Length: 343
Ligand code: ADP
Ligand code: MG
Image (cartoon, rainbow, N blue to C red; front, side, top):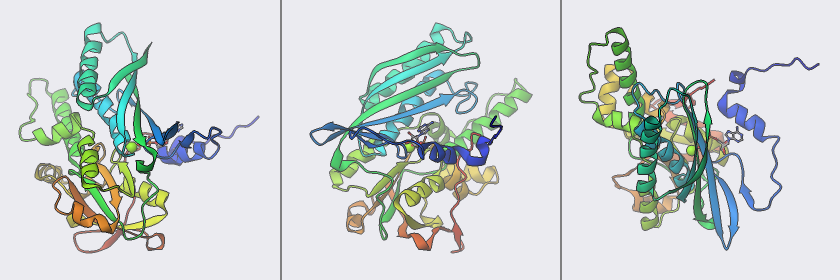
């Protein structure tokens, strides 16, 4: 009998996925891209591809209903899926929604969840076309699968970054993580003293970043208008450092990014300092911003320069030069992915 037992945390989430992917091969010529990007890419003929991605949110792991209302959860579950289609430079068109519910939830609660899902569907022009409903013994599980579409030639993979390309991020980073810190703090205070009202004043922006993230469909449209096709792209769900390492690994390149260039909102910085955290560390390792990280060829610099939605934070180097973050003192620090560890 084989008694071998390897703990999952020995491999980590990404190590486990790589381990499983190594033994999986594709047999259909229509499966253009399988495991390893933000969405799978499927040939549907005439130069068009279907993009397919799925994401599961588990109560107690990904969300806490003591501070995230069900309507927000529904919205967020759709947004994070649409974000993966954006990361392929595609357009999301349909979703299926699967839920596992315990008897803790009345019909009204499920309706609230679906109000958020429907609002997101309407905002992103996505149709809800099916799903599955089942029971759960421990809390709520919501799993959404999204279908998107693109022209095959326009699909952007994690693997296309080239030496000298510029590294760009959209919006600002670290806000969702600091929003979570505020919510967790107020939850602790409430547990200790239920009479105390939560102190959320002055934190509206970062709370919105945590509770109501948006997929950057607008950025995909701007890029199209600007006639810029990124050379590689990924969405930031686990933190800038982790996602940049994915791009570098998949593209077999290195990178330099600069602390002073990383876009951080003033509210994020102030809250980080309040918690005695370095704002840059929050931007590098805090997850759930759902901004886009992409690389562009140098020739497109003028088209992106000064754009209020996009910031150039560094450049791609040869793989031999490694992956570095240049800190405030100008010291090159090797980039390490901390990201989220679920295991
Ligand atoms: P993202 O953060 O963009 O949603 P993930 O890190 O969750 O991407 O997944 C990376 C890749 O691994 C994706 O291609 C995803 O489809 C694939 N993947 C994740 N979990 C599994 C699994 N259990 N079995 C097969 N493929 C998986
Ligand atoms: Mg992704």
